[in-house]
Length: 355
Length: 107
Image (cartoon, rainbow over all chains, first blue to last red; front, side):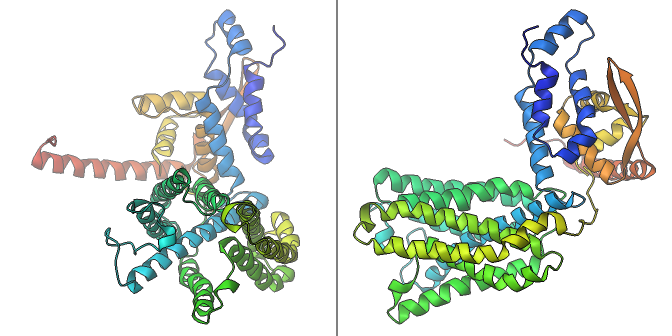
């Protein structure tokens, strides 16, 4: 014996990834089945197998996937995991909606702009956005990705999870290509903010779409579908009004808009959160997750203010800090309700789909 | 019903089986196309048990460990029969259409 953990101990360590309630019910059975798949019946061989072998990566991956589905619970899951599952699903939808709003804005430009881009379905890029004169594809890719996110959002809301996942991965790759091209040519005006946006709004949602599994309850279609144009108007109308009246300098940048929008949603949700009504805790938890994403985006964007194009304007950092403070104060209003969501929610109805 | 769930239910159709026996049976039934890992198997078993289609049968000691056996419930047997009917009907449509045009290969 080497004193090293054996095969069984190694597998049990992997199983520690699973939630406690699940391990309590299934761990011994899983270990027995796992060891059965290794043991040969020959005492010498089995002794060596038990001492030296390790679970394969496919076994480990299958446990990780199972753990992900259990932590982001669906119908029938314990309250805490169902609350997390719902909050992550709502957060993914909200983050995708930001992309979809960008796509809608691209469509608006298509309809309003006099000259169309050679590609035909993307507007002529503003001069500041054309990274390299004569090379239009990165901007085209950016707009096309925006349109693709509208479809991703709609597909997810309508329950076409697999299609949404595939298309989201492609749209994220398009965004990544656009970013990488800007980075390599040095044309990216705000690299910290842009990369943070890609990670928080592309990579994270694509990974977190795992929460839309077979046990996940269907998305409330109409409220989410109507939320898209409503959010677009909420963001675009004040921006257009400020531009039209010559107050464009008052419009916050995208990280600032994210902070303020989430703060407004927190304040609007506070009366319901304080009422303690069933189901409000999940929305509080969703707002806390969105606030974390907005704050991370805001903080990352400070990197851009400390260098390059924005170096001459330290005022931007003060504004950014003020936006962060507003966000933190607003999120503090719903945080207690979010904490309670994990214990005080009514049990999810048990309607699991076989398999 | 997913392919994995269908094969797991089929593996239990002629009697209770423990976890690893189900893995072996599914591989055999699917002619090696479906190779369940233990995490995937228990994901499917958990869903099927949650839906009331299977239930624990008994536990038996084997090499110092307990093997839990699972069996189909009445609902599970009914669901499997319906799924088999559906798949058989689909297969006959496919065969009929292929029969009309022949198994042509593109190119």
